Length: 212
Image 1: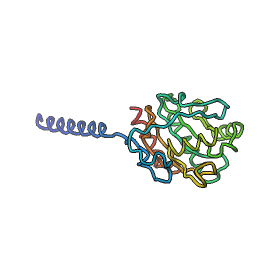
Image 2: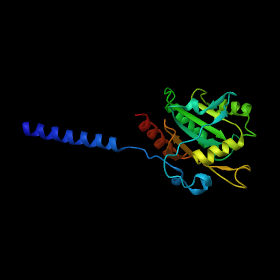
Image 3: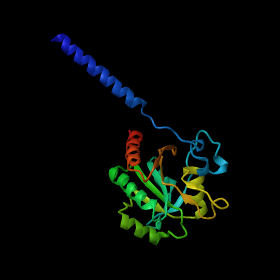
C-alpha cells in the first residue's frame, strides 16, 4: 500500500512540475516591423528588428473627447482599423471586438481602440451612432477619428494594419482584418485575424497571459 501511495505521489509531482514548467515557458513574442509583411510597413521602419514601440497619438472618440496614449498608459489593449460604412469584414471585426469587450468588461486594465480609415467621413456623430448600435462600452472601447495623416502614420509606422496605395497614404488606403495586441510597455505582442473566431479565442487567452 505504501509503495502504491508513493507511486501516486511521484506521478502527481511529475505532472505538477511539468504543468508549471509549461506555464513558465508560455511567453508571447515581441513583434518588430521586420516581422510583418513588407506591404504593411512604412519604408522608413521596414528594417527595424528590435525595440519597436507604438507612437504617441491624439484622436477624438465617439463622445467627442480627445483620447491620447495617456489614456492607455499601463494598459493592455487591442487595436484595429475600420470604417463605419464598410459592408464586408468590418461588421465581423466589430462583433468579435465586442466579444473581447464582454470577456474583460470588469477588468480596467484591458482596453480597446478602433481607428477609422475614413476619418473625413466618420465624424463624431457617425461614430456615436455606430457605437450605440453595436453596444460599445464607452469606458472600455474608444472608436476614434482624427487627422487622416496622423491615423495613416500610426497605421503604417506603429501598428502595421493597413496597406498603402496611391502616392503614400494621402489617398485612400486599405485596412486589414488584423487585431493588434499591445502590452503595458507599448510593445506589439500579437497579431490576429479579427474575422476568425478561433483567432479571437487565441487573442483572449494571450491577453490573460499578459495580464498574469
